[in-house]
Image (cartoon, rainbow, N blue to C red; front, top):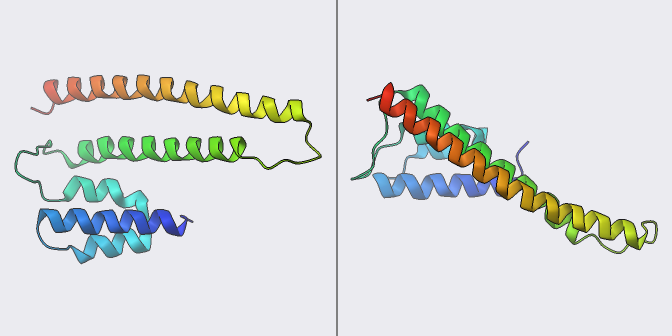
Length: 138
């Protein structure tokens, strides 16, 4: 189950985005509200394009690319949530001070490692996307 704030934020973004592209698309607003943000890649693959925007004609490729973007954001949000939770851990008498310092240091190292690995993943996926679109999806 998605947290209400994530569902609300995704729904508001779809409403705002669909209104910018034409008129408010109540179908997609209701789909995202009722079924959750996992259907955002489908919306992004079928929404009308603005002037200057382009995408390939292959629905499945667009869905794959948009799913990668969504998963990257969700993993990033999860990593940020864990970092904030560990770093703002209230003082607990049952946890030794050294252990709390280890948790905070590990969280900081984890965020740095995540940023580096996410950057490599994005660069690699962008290279793959450009290669496939140039060679196969002209």
